[in-house]
Image 1 (cartoon, rainbow, N blue to C red):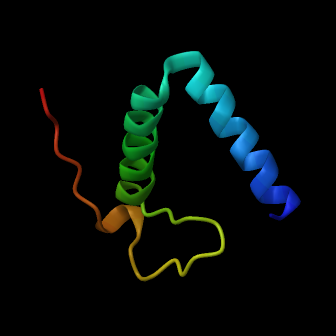
Image 2 (image 1 turned 60 degrees about the vertical axis):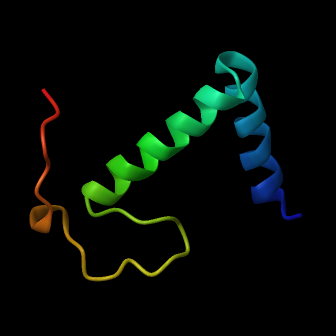
Length: 61
């Protein structure tokens, strides 16, 4: 495992310890959805053609 992945995993463990594994999974999914909706991408992945200006956000209120 690379040092990057070890540090990332340590961060995951801190989050799980603070809010529990179920909530950590929910947080990860919500964070990923927010990143994607703003046109972001995971480090090292292909950014694709999606831009934040191309995304329509939907209010759940």
